[in-house]
Length: 308
Figure 1 (cartoon, rainbow, N blue to C red):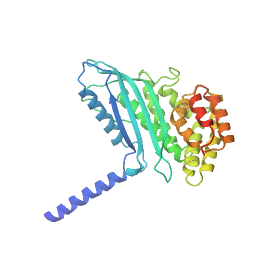
Figure 2: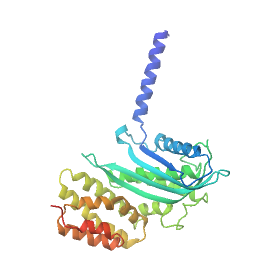
Figure 3: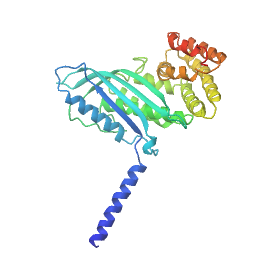
Figure 4: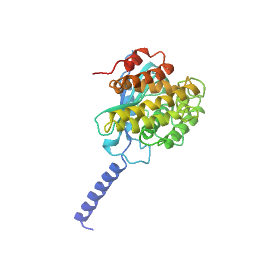
């Protein structure tokens, strides 16, 4: 074989590999921040390394079999606030805020799907530790936490585009929870905490509260996405979802999915109903006030007279 032929084959291999990598694009476009301002007398480089490791882990792992173009990646953010760190043992305690967004059809607007704070984050990490993805085994509590929220982000994104479209990824999240529960690590035990990771999974998969997933689809695909065609029809579809939300509340008034909906959507609802007629505003106010009586400030903004 001539040198020219070898060179040509090498180029073809490189181009095919690049094309395959593009075809097999990963799903997440995740920004990660590790805030260690509460920690003193520790080499802060370890937190920079941790931030970089988490960023690469989330963005470089192939989480699904679906094809994602670069512009289709799910925009999300993780903020880890470190409350305690023992440099000797590597034990870290903190809080993790998870946010994800989804584009609204034919607009530049990004709507929030998740805005959730996990207050029971505990794991071991030493500088230089490798984060290894393993779907069949629990490599560490840190990777288990990242796996769980990656699958949750993807599941909710798929649910927002197709009714129950997130099924495969809730199953993967459930597998993470099962493995983690047997490890004895905190934040995973059933009934341990109404807002821990087990409770979050149950909120979206238990029969009594799973209508939150139907709400996710109707709110986004049948509501927001249709507002480019008709603002009124899209908003009316969103209004209908609050009866479903009330059903969830009646079944499980302390379900974490209710607070997750509030934290993701209440500021947006103020804008959505800014030009609604007063009857629609009053209807929304009455239902949501029964579910979220402590949210009077934002509920009053929803009920305010329509903008002229």
